[in-house]
Image (cartoon, rainbow, N blue to C red; front, side, top):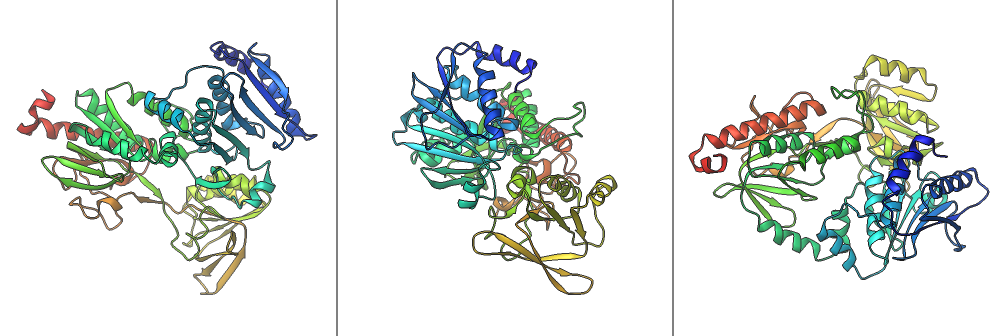
Length: 523
């Protein structure tokens, strides 16, 4: 199951395990069960702390493997074969269950340990989903630290009956004690805030006590990370406040145009960005959403939890998100057939017909990826020509299960009250209304800047909602700078966002040294 190189690497990692770990396997006569049994035996051969046993629970999912600590009585279950993006989740579960210390703050460790009610988490994933491991690993970590918490990863492609029964059409989908808990990306902090009712109040109090920053970066994507590093290197008191560190990059499957690196993946790049930021004295305040900007002897950023952060200068780098169709039915069926990440949710539509809205690079790439999974893909493009690169168009046209319709204006998402059943569109040439029966709709029509929270501020925005900046990243407010996809920077690329963040940060430094009130901060 595991090749020699991986075994050698794992054997080295497992040397840090100090406590016994039992691998409880539940099998049937399927091929996946054979794979899981081989995986369990391969792992057991790498450390004398591991023991493989049959799971005595007759009600457990099959195939599944439970990582059980007989000392702490904790259990973490993988229903399916945790390979692909979830292999790291398995390795971490083994390490944490075996006594290897986890990379979690003392505050979070104490918060997890203090939870006194039984919490049974089930998280439905697809093995091709890059967002899912973050959620799985956060829940597994909680389960490894508190025996009242259990976590089960469920491969949605393998347990289709459950997926159908629970009407799961987007991953990661988390259930807590049998009830839907969340859908989509979540961090450990976000999960703890939801299960610990007092967490938000404690965080707000802690944030309110922070001193005024020289530079506060709002947003934790490539632009924000770059800005923070450049500011910290100048010796400035620097903070990052972000709803999700990494932003959209965390959801990007493949990155092949980042100069000096032939190819990488979004989550890997995000981890490297975070590691680089932490090399400097940067106060990273994750899982915090900015809701307002005002001036009061410096700039104040109001957060969703009521806390207020103050700074002498700001770098606004809140990025962008997928643009929505804004047609009837879209919001109703979001997560129930309407999706925005083909890599994450595509496997849930195996053998079914789906549509991709948008004929740019993102749309055609999505169609090509989905064509390997689903029965048929229909691409609907509003214009009379496709905007994708010619090489992508040729590839899409070569696939027999892709149909491309141009001059198509999507008018409604159709459903049965529980899930998507089709869509309607207007032929812009003939004016005729048409309908397509399908199970899923993947929206790939570009980005919209995250600037709603600035509508009542004095920051000038374009009619598209982008922050207007000059060559130095300056906005309409002195001391406030913009960077990345949220601005008028014409090309939305990771490497351009990073450069934009550096420019904005240097602009903020220049602003600070030219204002006498701030001289002490940069002396």
